[in-house]
Image 1 (cartoon, rainbow, N blue to C red):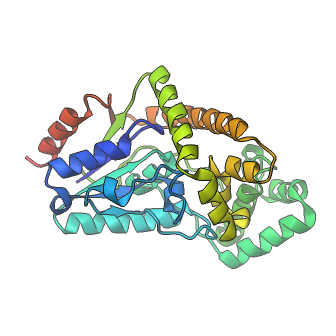
Image 2: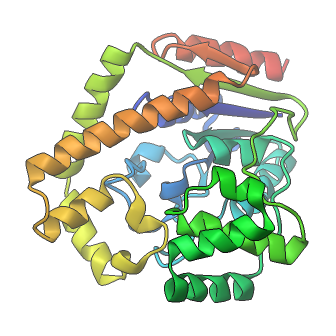
Image 3: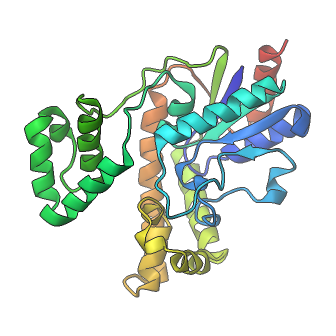
Length: 303
């Protein structure tokens, strides 16, 4: 049995999950598994609104602070490790609560999805080739061997072109973006989605952005830069950090960065909602009704 709490950024998923875990018995009854691609990184706290140790209220959290910023986040690796966490929690007699807004990561944990194999040596060689011949030429090579993938992958997305070429070389198969069909990997999976009106959600996003900057986003980014953030393959692209780097470089003012982060977060929220609304398993509830609804669901899962 596994409970997932999903929904867009700023809707209150983490708070709802922690409150539920505390009410049903705390650390003896439940543990939380994160499904947020950027919260995997150590040191990226303010910009990802990561729950603090105090906010966790003694509930064990998994898949948070497991990667250095120099490492590339892999959904295939996340699938392996998140499922190991879930299986261990179930084996201990507790309820695993999966929480997050990264749709593909949620699906990687919950759904029957097989990710193509990887080979770091092949990828490294292809990345060097991309630097040597450029993005357009690399995309042309993909088009020659895997035209279907080339058709749907933007030539400017070098990482994705490299990944498609890697899959083709390692497996001999075409690489196509994987869209889950919502076939659960676990029996008894229950997925609850938190939702609210866009007006209220946009207000929360604006407040969240202001709080990020007031809580030290620029200082955190400066410290991460000393650890190699500029060269980090995935971490440097995160909303908030990308803009903070621009401020530190004098390319943006703080006000411009705030506006950019707010706009990017709104755009992300629309993508998240589009992703989750396709999943027929999700039981949607507003945050104000979530406590009673989650209690009822847990009672139903554990009669």
